[in-house]
Amino acid sequence: MRNPNEVVHSGYQEGNMDASIKLSNLTQVWFDSLQGWRLQFFFIPATLVTLITFATNPVLLTCIFLSRALRQETRYLLVANTLAADLLFLTLNLTTVFCNALGVHIPPTLCQLNMVFTVTAYCCAILTVTVMVADTYAAVRWPLHYRELLPPARTVRILVGLWVVAALYPLSMWIMMEMTEGNAGAVDTPICLVLISLGFIQATNMVGVHIYFCTAALVCTLLIVYCYVRLYMVTKTQGIWQSRYSRARVTLLAHGVLLLLYFVPGLVFTVELFLFQQDDVSQDVRVWINTINMCLLMLLPRAFAPCLYGLRYREISDTLVQLLHRRRRLCKVTGA
Image 1 (cartoon, rainbow, N blue to C red):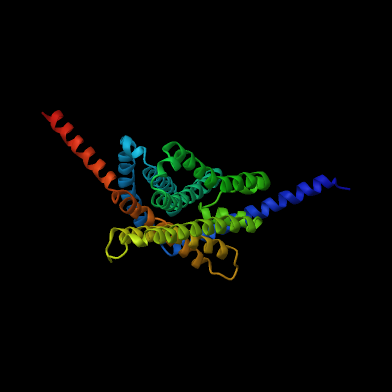
Image 2 (image 1 turned 30 degrees about the horizontal axis):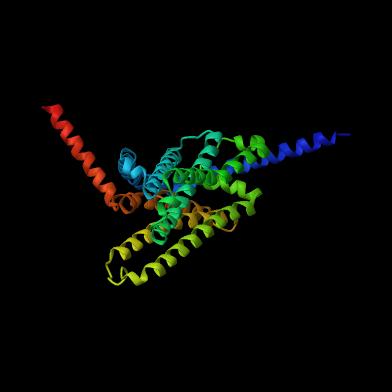
């Protein structure tokens, strides 16, 4: 007669083996579909958009951190955090797209860590742009007490808290998966995708994954809508909304477009997670949606953010001009 512990252990190993085979087969079919539709060429626009962002974001971050005045402003610290989160996300996303397009195998542990850091960076950017709206509301609603409400030290603590909140769920899910799945998480796969990693987590914890994403999206959306409605109610008697092309209208439109660009890819990704569990959905449809979302939709807000959130602030533009003039004078002195 077999020991009950041996039976449980044997069943656990068989479950791990089945999960490993399923994961390996799924990723192989996904890779074949990716190659069959020539979707690996989507890495070209993804690379171009990423390189443009890599050329602008570090410049804006340099302007903010080299200027003592800008470092003391809450809104610029929030902009810097958004740009930093975008850089991390773009680095991980482009690495994943390149490896999948070229058929480079990523070790399983690195693939899981890639999922953790990618979700963290994306969620942190979403949380930061949400806090930026709340910051604007606080500056307009309580102008005399604004600096007391959000001094630089408190802003830094808020930013650290945003990173912790953004990382808490994906990190805990990864740890839980490593503890419960054992060797199933160590299977070597042809491609590495956040969707597949979260999809397998969702298979065992569907409620948790949907609650995490839906709750975060709902809270951020409600806070943004509330702040914008209150801003309009507070400022409607000041005449700043009367002109069709007033600065307030243009700023609201620019911020609204950027917020939409940030939130839409997250909504599409939530739909992808839902379709991942549907057996009646074509695999090609899933591959197409995921590729377009990864290589285009998720990159658009990162490409527009430097222009709409960075260069639109006059202080950042002035600091950039000063740095360029200082560098030009330095070059002239060195050349002389």
